[in-house]
Every structure is written in structure tokens, then in C-alpha cells.
Image (cartoon, rainbow over all chains, first blue to last red; front, side, top):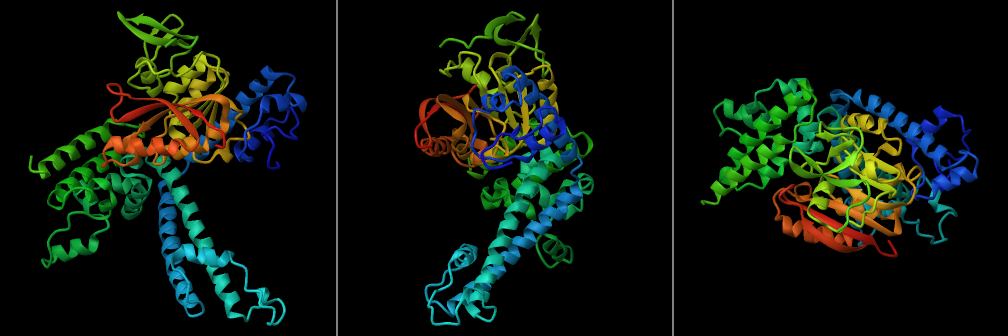
Length: 292
Length: 211
């Protein structure tokens, strides 16, 4: 399917399987008068028939996708979030290397992934004095640097793609947890616990300090205060709460997240009232913190 | 404000409520072919209940973003024309598919409303875009989907403050969202959706050129 074509373009009017595939595949970013075009191209006799076919193709496609997505499991999500973290960390490390290298060649060199992307997209300096096509010269340090920058940018793109995958998968695997924690934190908790079932079986005091194992064991050895929060610190309800009430906020959040994980594991129904209960609890904790 | 054709005020258990004609979807009370439209469960229902001038007359071609389990979009499909329902999550889509079964002009699309290229090859230009998505960047979703609206079309969006930032004052969030919307729309009317939905702003807008 080319850029500006509808889902029916070039399809045999009786090809139902093909129609479903086309609906699923996506394509142009530009809408058009598809019903008129479909009738004009002979895909449907009239608008009514077009809409009938559209209904069959879209419902069948959505049903297939739901079935596939519901097979999405917590283990895939776990690998996804870990890969996302690895890809992002590595991209940042490589970006630092690129910046350091580039700084040795150009005083105006920038930093970060954004600079690596800029460098990757820049054209090699056409000074003409060098050995002809310096652009493809494997021994040219400038070319090696540009190639490294291109890989860095590509890796950062993959991290973004992985995040997108994590967002989708988290909502499918654990809708309540994802709604309450945000998809990325939901995935982190599942990943740290080792799976949704393991997370659902944890006491909320464990969920509260997931990701803070080092601090927890230091505390258990008797050499440190108990950690107030682990990875749930990234949640606005912990981070945005004044420090002296943060422990309470973390405990309240962990409690509701644990319930959300249990609902997701054992029932799967979406329960929006859980979010409301948590909102209310945090509001109370924060007002208390204001000293009012 | 006049009601769109196909939406009526009817008495259910002695209370006047909006209703549309269609198969029940979420256990709502029915009266013959009519089923009550619960404004507490539907942002668009609340917008109608609060008297916003939605410009709806009935029979419109509609793109619904954030269809979820189909609570609202089923009512829309009852009185509108061809209705394209975009939903991102698989689980609610299962219920939406049930709602679509008895509604031949309701087209469910499992896609991300932030990426129109996933569904623009299916969705024709529409008279109305209804948006109720609970993700960050709700204004960006509305502007990127402006491409689907006909020149004289309407955007009906419910902006949920909590989806943008749970800690910020909703008023500031709404101001930012409206400012962002103005890149592609002229905002015609806004109204808080309380008491039906806390910290939601209902917005009616029309597309401007150069979107």
C-alpha cells in the first residue's frame, strides 16, 4: 500500500483476509473520502456496501488484535522494560563518548544524545583536498565518529520504541497497576518482583522498598535507617510529597499498588475507584504535612 | 441548546435523563428501545447535561478517541452517522467489540490516538472529533487529530487534569492545554464538568486553517 491510499486500495472486493490485514497494517497519515474512493474504484457498489465491509474488517481486525495482545504476558513486559533501561543507559554512555571525541576535534561540539543525532545527520566536511570520497573512508576518524553517533541515535530511538511497547503491554498485562503507577513504573515493579504473580503475592511493605534492596539490607544489618521507598519514589505521590510525610505517602501508595496488582492478577477487571481512594488518602497526608 | 436528533429526555424511575436508542451496553436502565445515558460515566453525556453548545444535530460522521469499553461511543453511534472508535488498550476493546456487534456503523480500531498514521487509512474526514483520552499530552492528541475534521467540524474534548499532572492546580493545567489547542483550533466554549466529573474541563472547539 502506497502512501496515500485507503485500506481497500488494490484489494479484491472479496478478499476478507486481505482487508483485515490492511486495516491492521496502517499506512497514510492523511485521511481522505475513503467511502467515495472505494465506490469509484469498484471495491464496493455503494456507500452502504462499503460501510458493511468496513464494519466486518474493523471488528475482525480488532478482535484478532485483542486476542494477540491478551496473550501479551508479564514476562515479555519484564524483558521489555529491562531492554529499555539498557538501551537508554547505553545510548547515554555512547553519547558521552561521542561528545568527548567530538570535543577533541571541534570546539563547538555539544553533548548528549541530541548532539549525537545532529552529528550523525551532518554531512562530512567536503574539503575536497582529502582522498576523494572521505565520506566512506573507514580510516577517517571523522567518519568513524559520525558512524558511532549514528548508532547512538539509533539506540536512543530503539529505547523510545521499547518504551512505547512497554506502555502498551503494561496496560494489557496489568491495567489497574498501569493506571495507578503509570505504565513504566508498573513495568518496573513487575520486573523487580520477577512477574505479576510474584508482585501480587508480596506484602505491601516489600513493594514499598522494591528497588531499594541495598539500603534495606544495610538496614537489616543494623547499619542504616530503614528505607522509606524504592522505585516507587519516581511516582509523583511520593516525590511530590514533603519529605517528612514521604514515608506515609510511600506506604499508602505501596498499599494501593499491591491491591491493584492483585486485582490485575486474579480478576483483571478495571477498578477506577482504587485510584480515587488513593487520591483521597494522599490528599489527607499532604494536608497533614502542611500543618493544617 | 437543542439536542441532537436521536437524543431525548425521558423519564427513568421518575427522573428525567438523556437517552438514545440502541442495545444496552453497560447495564444502564432501559425504557423500550431507549437507554439512559449516564452523565456520571460519560464526559460527553456530562457536556450535554451541562448545556454546552456541542453543535451536534445527529447523523454526524464521528471520530471518537479514547473509546474505552464503549460506554459513551455506543450512545454516539446510536444517534450519529459512521462512528470510528479508537481505543489503545486491549481489555476494554473486548467490551467495545460487543457494543459494535449490534451497531453496524460503529467501527472499532485498536490503535494509539497519538499516531493517526495507524488509522488514517481507514477513517474518512469527519464532522466531529470526540476525545476522552487519559494520557499525558491530551492537547497534543487533539491537535494531531485535527487533520480528520472537516472545515466546519467540531472538536468536543474532555481534558482530565489528573492525567497531565496529579499535583498541579487543575486551573493551570487547563490554561496550558487550551493554549496548546489554539495552535490548531478556535476554542468556542469551555466548562468544568463538575459535579459529574471532578477536575475535568469540557471544551468545544473548531479547527482553524493551517492546522
